[in-house]
Image (cartoon, rainbow, N blue to C red; front, side, top):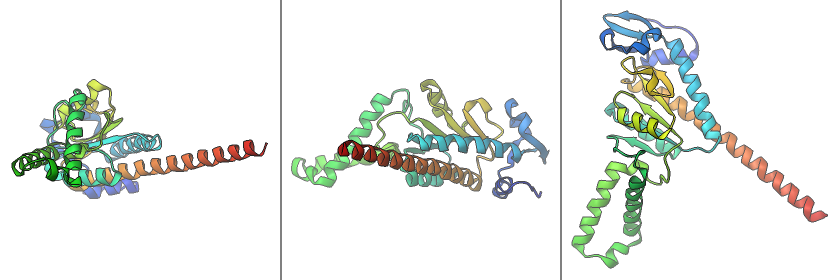
Amino acid sequence: MAITGTPTVEALAKSGAHFAHVKSKRHPSMKKFILGTKNKMDLIDLSATEEFLDTAKTTIERYGAEGKKIMFVTGKNESIKITRAIAEDLEMPFVAGRWLGGTFTNFTEIRKRINRMADLESWRESGELEKKYTKLERLMLSREENKLKIRMGGLAGLTKIPDLVVIVDTNAESIAVNEARLTGVPTIGIMSTDCDLTDATYPIVANDASVKTVTYILEELSAAFKKGQGRKVKEDEKKEATKKEEEKKEDSK
């Protein structure tokens, strides 16, 4: 089925963003975003997806301009690699695997584990472990560090709950969605037609099981965030230049 429209709509179509679930799995909140049904499969109206994506891009750009911290979350095998890559490129925290219960709602305890992970890494790299611990103790500490990295390596350096969370498949990540809601963290949710539209502050209705679709959307969001960061850098440079100019004037008086 050929889909034409704006460049964004065509790019979404090329990625397979319009393919959804069988009609029987459709959530009631998604009805108005269905373009039609083919072979019992719902087809998403990509003009609506474009509007959702534009809103999410505007939002995440603003967060970038304000110097905010964002987090990326997915537990879907097909989207783990790209989610990790996008987050690492932006130097932002991520969960690419199983969500650790309490990451937001019990962050005080989670932060203790993050700090412990950082300490173990620091001791190992500085050679302190060699000086203070026996071979057996070093082996046990190494195992502890590896276990922590597997479970929460993407959270390294996180000192507070993030300001915004990007979630791939809000149905699959229902615990993360709930914790974000309970702690007041807004969310951008890439979701298919089996999801509840209200599970994300800024929903993006699209094929959340397609690697190409998720990659396209995450790359668009990443570019918008970087654009916002670029604005912040320019604004900070302008403020610094103005400050120095004022200091010069004061010194010349």
